[in-house]
Length: 168
Image 1 (cartoon, rainbow, N blue to C red):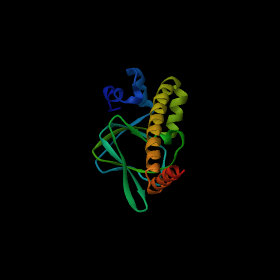
Image 2: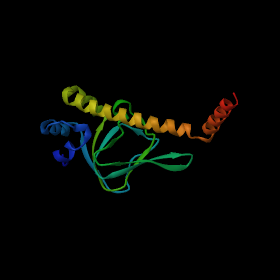
Image 3: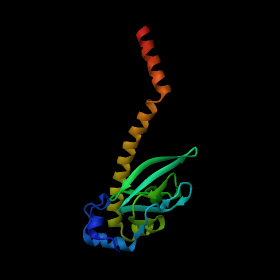
């Protein structure tokens, strides 16, 4: 593995891991490098890989009705494709490298092997991953609710309710 212990130990998913545990990752995770402007994940294509971004930056894009929408930028220390560990499927967004990047990747099949062969390390990793997914979901749910309630229809409905209260 060309990626160093120092690079990996800074990542949230490996908080508290010792050097020996991180060295075991070499058995299951593959390191990879991509040049700038590379499509790492393509929307609409079957995906079975989880990516941890060790160096560089990527952009998450989603095509809706022929328009490309920027969803997020992901930087070193973060990850994407986490759902593929548990439920591989068609990608709902594309991921493109904005800079040259270095990743650690694991397929759904290799993740199952990781859990079977190293349940102690896999449990710590999975717990950290689940916490991060839960935080993302909580944050995104709040944004989605705010977006729902800030539509013209929702605002108009709220104004009608307020007007009805004033008349009552």
